[in-house]
Length: 109
Image 1 (cartoon, rainbow, N blue to C red):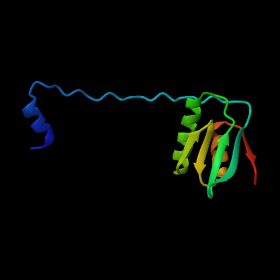
Image 2 (cartoon, rainbow, N blue to C red):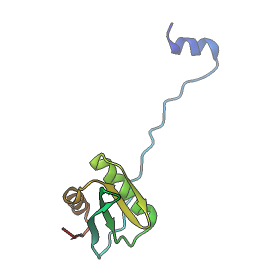
Image 3 (cartoon, one colour):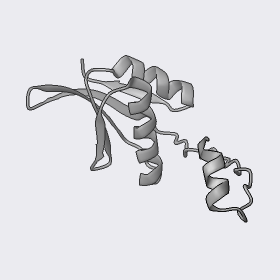
Image 4 (cartoon, rainbow, N blue to C red):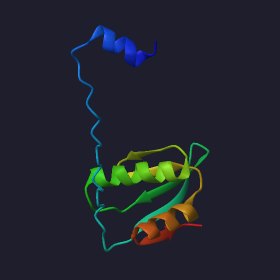
């Protein structure tokens, strides 16, 4: 006796309805004319890549931070209107942002 049969025995009047497919709406990020600044920094001996200069909504910038972290498979955070990514991934981040339609400017080294 599998789980479906057990549930039918417990709740004979219950009608199983098909699950509704939830469609996620593609959220459009606000594209700006000024370039995002992508720089390399060491904090407490650790290497970080910092992205700043976004003039849109903070929620959009947080969403962009999440997408970048998932793309790279690394940790990071969003603080003080900056995306902080653990490690030196400037080249990969810049290529990813250019593919999304952003202008990116490399600062430092």
